[in-house]
Each structure stands twice: as C-alpha cells, then as structure tokens.
Length: 386
Ligand SMILES: Cc1cc2nc3c(=O)[nH]c(=O)nc-3n(C[C@H](O)[C@H](O)[C@H](O)COP(=O)(O)OP(=O)(O)OC[C@H]3O[C@@H](n4cnc5c(N)ncnc54)[C@H](O)[C@@H]3O)c2cc1C
Image 1 (tube, rainbow, N blue to C red):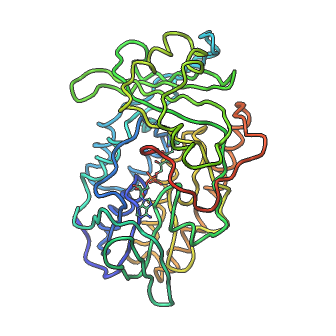
Image 2: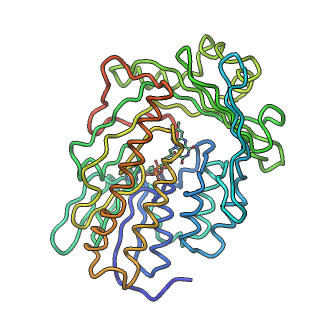
Image 3: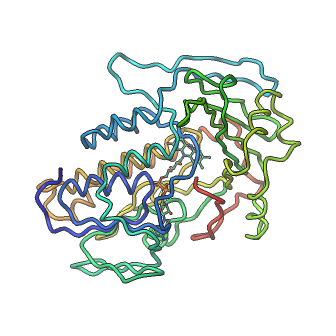
C-alpha cells in the first residue's frame, strides 16, 4: 500500500538488488519513481549469494509487508563453514552461530532475491532497454539522457548501475577499477550429496587457485543444487578482445586438477550455460557518494572483493538508509536528505571496502606485479551478471 503522493520525481538507474529495493521503498513512500534499466527485462541471471545477516536485516527494515517472508522462502540459512586445504584435509569446521530469534545469513540464488523484490514493485515504474549515457543538473532539477528513448527530468537521480557505473563515472571522474588478480568462474549445478544441509565449503587459496562451494537448496523440481566459485590468479590481458575470449572459456583443466577430485567433479558437471565468468575488480573508496541531486548506491558506490561476502548486503543497506532519509517529513529538503545519506553511509562503506581488501590480502589473494587498473570507465567485461 503506497502513501499519499509526494510529487517528488526520482530516477533510479539500474535494477539490480540495490536499485530494486530502493525503488520499491520509494514507491511505497509515495514518490514518483522511474526505474531505468539497460536490459530490456530484469537481469535475473547470476549465481548463488551468501547474504549475510545484516543484508537480511536491511530487507526486514524496509518493512514491506511480505517481502522478508518471500526472501526467507527463496533461500535457506547457512549452517556450517568448512575450511579445507587443496588436498581436501580439514582445516576447521565451525557452525554458523545464531542467537535465538536472530535473522539468519542466507544461501540464496541471486534470482530469488530479485524475484522477491520484483514481486512487490509496481512494474509501471520499470523502463527496460534504457541505458543512461549522461546526466547533468542545475539548482532546481536533474536531467538524464539515454542511448534510446526520451530524456528524463526530475528532482533526484540515484545511480544503482553497478560496478561499471556510468552515473558514478560522471560524479567521480577519478573512479578507477582496480584489478584484484583473479579470473573467476561461478556456476550452479544439480547436486544432492557433495554439499548439502546448509554447508559452505572453502578450499584455502594455494597454488594460484581458490574455490568455494555452498548448498543452494532445492530447485523448482525439488532437486538439490550446489553453487561453486573458482578463482585463478592471472594477469589481466591488456586488450579487450583477449579478456572477452578468456571469459568465454571454461575453467582450464590444469587449474581444476589442483582441487580434490570430488570438488573438481562438481565444477566439471556444470553445463556451460550455467557458468558465469568475470575478471575480479574492486574500486578505491570514493571521496563522495553524493553531488547535489545525484547519489550512488550499491556497487556503483563501493564495488568490493567478494572476500567478505558483503557487496550485496552493503547495497541493500544503502537503499534502506537513503530511503529513510527521503521518507516524507524525514529531511528538510531532498538535497539535504542525500547529504544525510552520505554522512551516514560514507564511513560505513569505506570500512567495508578497507576490511574487504585487508582480508583479500591476508588470505593470500595475489595482486599482479604491477597493480592493474582498468581505467575510469572500462568496457563491460562480464559474460553475464556478477
Ligand atoms: C565473484 C563474486 C562473488 C560475490 N559473492 C557475493 C556474496 O556471496 N554475497 C554478497 O553480498 N555479494 C557478493 N558479491 C557482490 C554482489 O554480487 C554485488 O555487490 C551486487 O550484486 C551488486 O548489486 P547492485 O545492485 O549494486 O549492482 P548490479 O546487480 O550489478 O545491478 C546494476 C544494474 O544496473 C544496470 N545498468 C548498468 N549500467 C546501466 C546504465 N548505464 N543505464 C541503465 N542501467 C544500467 C545493469 O544492467 C544492472 O541490472 C559477489 C561478487 C562477485 C564478483
């Protein structure tokens, strides 16, 4: 149920998890929301996600009736973390701790998260096939231009357009992607035995690789699924064509052979259509998340390594924090609402980014000899979704 119309016109650019949650809450607050997405439809492809407790709490804090239940129904709680070396020997196994009444950390497919959010959104606000190419703002309004279709003009523009954000490249021209040193493959495969019961397996980094596996629960037909991630240290090729070609290849057999046979078999059993690949990047902490009537949330604001499984959670937290500032009566003006959001979130996301890099270094994630940078706004390199 939406509140009375406020008349505030807000564009959200990018319908990933952060943009969808924000659009949804803003709609309920009575704002005139336009959600622009480059793809014609919602991009629900992707793989498994460990949505840590604070991400689930952010969805709960959005207080959209039924949304938390839908999210919880789409995933299942992580029960145990198991660390092994590359011979398969156990290093440590620890239960996922959870106080009575606490929300769980969830093992969940990205699609289930987006479906849950989409299910509560009024789809009239969604404009697919609209790729933002630029924006500009004056004292009274902000305008956005798109590769196709008419421009948009309104009160606020929020960039939720992911790691390769166009909105962010104009807000922070010095924003650079930093290469983290890995080519990464991820996949989902039917598996009833290797990884079940809410288990999360980590194969500690060594010999130039790292891998994880987790139980993704049953598919639509009730068959168990396992998500896997495989990281191989290598230098970032200079040219775009080579990068793209390498992302089209499966995990090299020689690299896969470094894993114990049962773990390698899970990866080998995955149909190529179920595999996504990317080069791993993060960004340096940005000096600002806001300029006037424009703000950034999610990976656009703070793309970080997956070492802490914190990326999606941070974006959901951003969405809730920003929406709370924009709730009717919460801030004196929309511009002050964005400033309040920045004051609240900048130190938090900087801490996440710093911690995520620290953990990456501690767990031995190799950086290339010269720390690669892919430039301020590199070409898209993902074969599919992150
Ligand atoms: C290997 C790996 C493992 C990960 N594991 C985890 C994990 O376990 N837990 C976790 O919390 N996080 C994890 N993450 C991070 C997580 O996937 C991201 O942080 C999260 O999906 C980002 O969401 P987002 O909404 O900010 O951006 P996205 O989901 O990237 O959405 C951005 C949207 O914007 C659209 N878009 C882009 N440009 C434009 C444009 N110009 N105009 C209009 N639309 C545009 C895109 O099409 C897309 O739909 C992982 C990331 C990687 C790479």
